[in-house]
Structures are given as C-alpha cells and as structure tokens.
Length: 384
Image (cartoon, rainbow, N blue to C red; front, side, top):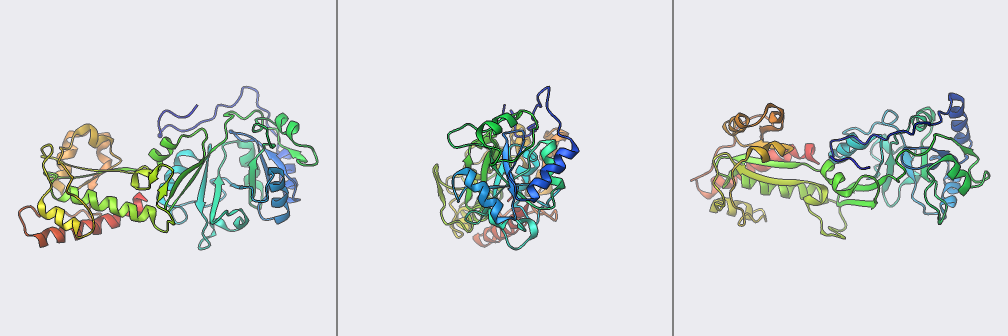
C-alpha cells in the first residue's frame, strides 16, 4: 500500500517467516558477482538479477537475459556506500532520496563526469541518464556494502512472465545456467516494482509507474513557496512572479524540449507551488501599475494578479514562507502555532528588510525588482 502522506515513510512489512541468508551465503554471492556471474538478489519490491557494473561481459550477459542489448540497467547501491550529497544531486532529488531511500524508488539522474559519483558505472548511462536505487532489504544491503565493485541490476522477469517475487519464481523462470546463484531472502514484502522517476533539467517523468504515485513524487520533490508583504499589491506579487521565472529557468535549463505528454512543462510539473499574500491585504485588489511595468520589463505578466490576505491555515501549510520585512514576519508568527514558526523567514538571507516602493516612481519599483531578484537567486539553490 502506498503511503497516505509524502511525509510518512515507506516501510515494507516483512513476512512472518523470512529466510535470513547467513554471512557465508552473502560472501558466496559477492564471490559469484566478482567472477562475472548473474546473481538473483531479493528486495522489498521484486527480485532482481545482478552483475558487476564494471565488467562489460557481465553486463552483456545480463542484458541478453532481458532480451535486448539496450536493456536499461540500474545501479544498485546503499546510502552508506556512495556520497549522494548536495554536491552531487540537485536539491529536489535530495528531497526524494531523503524521503524514499532506502526504498521502492529508482531515480534516473543525469550522469556527470565532473564528480566521482558516477565512477565505475559509466556503462549504465542511457543517453546521459543513469538509473540508481538504494533497496530496503537487509540481506541485499549487506551484499552491496561488502562488494568492492559497483553492481548493476534489472528485474528478474522472463519475457512474457510477471516479475519474480520469490527465489522459487526465479528458479521457475530462469535456468541454473542463466542464473547460477540465487540469494533467497523470502517473498518480496511489497510485491510491486519500484517506481522509476527521471528527474533533472527539463524532465520530471515517471518512466515506470510503481508503488509511489506521480503525485506523491511531485509533492516530495517540490515546495510550496509563499511571499508575504503588507497589501499584496507591490513587493510580494513581484517576488512571486520573479520566483516563478527563476524556478522555470533552473528546472528547464538545458532542456531540448519543454513539453511533456501533459503539455508544456513549468514549475508545477516538478511539484512547486508559488503564491503571495499580504498581512493587511484585501481580496482582489489589482497590482500597482508600476509593479506591473517593472515585471513587464523582464518579460513577466503581473496584470492578472489579485491581492489576498495571509490566512493562518494557508501560511502554516506552506513549506517556505518569505516575508519582506521583520514586521511582516512578526505579524505572521503572532498568528501561527510554534510548530510552523521555522518555515517563516525573511526573503533576504542576511535578514534585511525590503523597503516598500508604494507611492514611488517607476525607477523605485525597478530597483525593488532588482533587489527581490537578487534575494531569490540566493535562495534558489535551496529550492532546486
């Protein structure tokens, strides 16, 4: 069963009688892999067929079992085995790994030759993208940790057959010559293949549906951002428009296509929601004329904006709340429960107020837009 909330961990429930392979069984599996053999490994989703990822002959053998020389293979790893930290992963991918790894999510990420994360698994790249998964199965995790080489895997699924959910299924679908070594970790507790998500510049695509839904993945990867000023006619709507533009530049950069099966991509395709409000705002007031012009100079249309008040429930539900001044922050904190206070901060990372341009000439609004844009660019790496 999928989690009810993106904040609830996916915890497989093991069967009551699950075989526990011995340390010797695990050593034999590593030895078999080191010799280029195909080894069946258990996981919480389905069984997989694994080989060394740094042996071309072993990879060719595995792809032949999959029926295609172009069979996509996944790098199977553990969180402790490889550094998938901030310098290697985009921030939204980090949120996904923190939420679902180890667990039933395979991420397809852009391969990079500029860091050591992809060292040894270059043959697994498919058109510049590498599939990675950290499974939640103690036996397989131990084998992965003990192996002094990277491991590639594909589902233990014979052509025309359902995925293997047990060691017995593997024996039924493959001969001993094809899969000489099988690690029996008991029935797969989830019994459903992992979700496969490709995420990177210009791409947020569920390549294979699985136990984690697309909506859950978007809610986890993206953020809800709320910008708050006084009347929601100048500073906060300008910040909202500038933030949308910054997100789209970051999320869609290097994209050969900005369209998907569901239409053009934008920040919402990656799970981001951007809004603004005012601590003393009415409902439906138009934006300042100069605010509209200042953003039009940047190719952004603010003309359809209507003001709205900051409602405590909506503020509390936002992942990040950016106030334009300390007085706005104090007003919000006075109406929120303590549990929501950590999400409320000033837009300026250094804690300075953004002066109100209301009543000033157009140049003041343009200067304000410059200031807002600089603060948003400073915040952007923590969003994307």
